[in-house]
Amino acid sequence: MQNIINFFLKNRYFFLFLVLLILSLFFTIRSHSYHKSKFINSANWVTGGLYETANGISGYFGLKKYNRQLVEENRRLRNLLFNRKHSYPDSIPDDSLLLHRPAVSDSTLLSQVNDSMVPQTRSYVIRNASVIKNSYHSLKNYLTIDKGKSDSISQDMGVITSNGIVGIIDNTSGHYATVQSVLNTLTRINAQLKKTNHFGTLKWNGVSENIVQLIDISRIAPIQEGDTIITGGMSTIFPKGIPIGTIKNYALDSSENYYIINVELFNDMTNLGHVYIIENTNKDEILELEQSVNE
Amino acid sequence: MNNNAFTNGIRFIVLVLAQVLICNHIHFLGFISPYIYVLFILLYPLKNENRALFLFLSFLMGLSVDFFSDSGGINAAASLCIAYIRPVVLRFSFGSAYEYQTLKISNTNLGQRFTYLSIMILTHHLILFWLEIFSFTHIFTTLKKALLSGAFTLLLCFLFIPLFRTKNQ
Image (tube, rainbow over all chains, first blue to last red; front, side, top):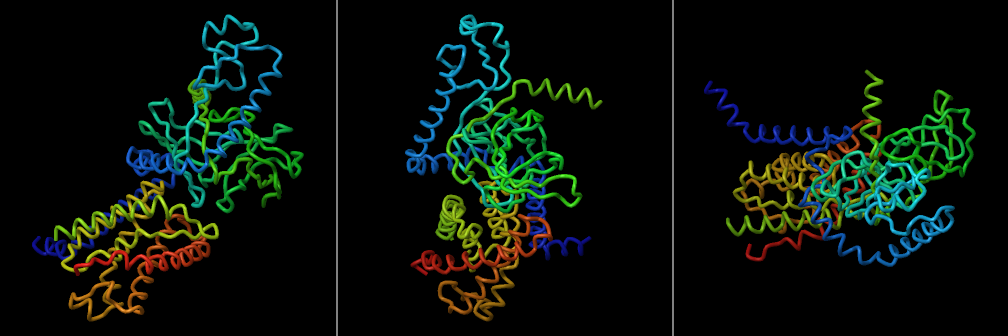
């Protein structure tokens, strides 16, 4: 017994080293699997607060560019608004913009529009946020945004900009959230061709920060360089039709049955300021239904 | 002693901030990033060191950087490893000066200092990049990244070491 205690005392530094090493490897391995980096992430108030302060300072240098982006987006939205057949009241609920279905939850607004045109529920709610930390150089990139649980942000919501997709919400804290970027080798997003309905999976091989890969597109699909890729409606995260990018080049995979397509992103992932977060309000219902089918 | 702990605390905070706010944004040629926070481990006082505390602080240093860069525990593991092997590398690089506890990093000659810094930084970077990629299939990418980033870190360390020299010693 004495010998065992002596042995431990003699090698106590080695054992301390071993314990800490196992702990750090545990954190590393956790972070390699999807949605498991619960403890070590930048969505806590220390790191989030610091990034927010730093971003507040550096944000001033990009104000001109953001303004230009906003004017451009306003122009596009006004274009849509004026070209509609039915004119809706020009007040949109301030923090939520409606996507796809021109649905209105407010009963006073509802009375002013043609009831038969408008579904009673809205399926997507959009919220805005600022990116306070961006990364695009490692293999597993995460962003941090300045909205969290208290702004009704939760895991598995989609994140987009006016140009295209950015990623998926990963961890949330009270006022911050981390976003798993499309530039992350763990990310899988359902995507399809814009002109036909052939769908596949979007992933990233970690090489270039503006090229992602679309796999599992059947070889009978008519594809051409320059075709647009959009999100498919098969996940509960993104609605159908959000732009992703254009086809840069393509090749058949080793089985010669599916294409591997290099997609050039519309979004400049190295330059993200303001983003939109999409909540699918029917998500629970869809998942419940799919669950019951599987059982 | 108290003064020493205070200096170390300040150094810890300054290096974490410098790493996450400045160095994490440097991507020279697209993939070369410096990891300047290893200076904390390299320059940790040698005199009467409490080894358990040193190991723990190094671990904490890496973990703080991990928190900021959403990278799991890779920086923590790499920092811990070089903290553990530091006595061996010190003995190898400086020889008798280390044995007699008269060593100050800022007073050593350039060749010895180069040996010490390059062994420590290279070990750190190899562990870091290997854990980040976590497979042997990309072994050449890992080696290339570790070597080039290591050279960059080494250059910055040489430039920064005079800044950390304490006057009264």
